[in-house]
Image: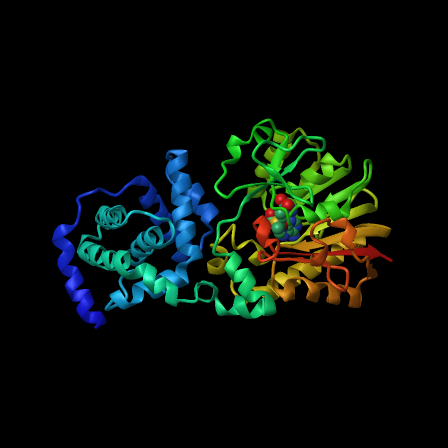
Length: 431
Ligand SMILES: C[S@@+](CC[C@H](N)C(=O)[O-])C[C@H]1O[C@@H](n2cnc3c(N)ncnc32)[C@H](O)[C@@H]1O
């Protein structure tokens, strides 16, 4: 049955529209290939694109992100129409075409014709007939096929699903939709038009809002930061004049929060390539911090610190709805080395604090090995105690405070407000 369909479909080759490949689809193909074939991040892929119109680039990003977000579902829909698995690049052309057809309301003739044009432009003429035939089938039958499929499950790698325990389905459902745009405002800045003030203080705009269209951002009075990512610095609650460090700082959202609160901030960043973004962001906001390029685990502060924010390097599985490339860049096997790095940073951080000083440990991860397990380990060998986070410290998210006094957010929470990234946050005090 499947093979017959395929043979019949190939005959449609004669009807292919001569529409040439457009820059958006060509860029989207490069992005998809960067992530799936070369295991580079979407962000790196975007940086490597040739100069192009900003709107085309944004559209390419959206198309590639949708193909990644829904890859399991898309591949399942395509499968019956493929006699053999085609070469990777052809498969990506099909994925992009199907993403447009199934999830982005691209009209059938445009989705098919641009995919065929793209195949030809990439010297894949031999497969133009296949692309045409398969995508025609998807345009005819794809929506009906979708109704039979468990999208959240298909689009989530099993090791992640297992790690998310009872919340897995809620999280996976939330990943199917593009995240809204959240910003943090400088103290005293009024809520910009079109934005909704969230109970935790962040301001939210609908998904797809261009940050360049928000006057407060353009004026250097706001920065992009998910509502959950704004919580660690809010909970740290740096006071004017306090000596604090942001141990893993770039691109600087949390450094900016602490500097805006009037603290004396030292921001440390290991990757020199990420430092210009940190400095650039602070300059744009007119904020000051001492910036150190180096390993936070070996940095020595100028005296003991009042407070530390350790936003540790992690698997970033809490940010999948914003970064749908994460499941293709990280693997279960990475957990051990990330946990070891976090333990090293936690140990160093405690040594920098004055007695009674507070440490906020945060990870944008949903994996237990990176959150509660690291705190349990720290409690067993470091001179620290848990300082439980109180529900009143995160208004509107009281239910995210665990029995142990940690904060655990995930994208399935706040569903009516548009969700939020997954974070684990703990506050420790040096004994
Ligand atoms: C989760 S990101 C930090 C995000 C940042 N706190 C913010 O809110 O904008 C982690 C950062 O830590 C940096 N990093 C990783 N290991 C580090 C180390 N040993 N010392 C300092 N920075 C490190 C990474 O390069 C990355 O920029």
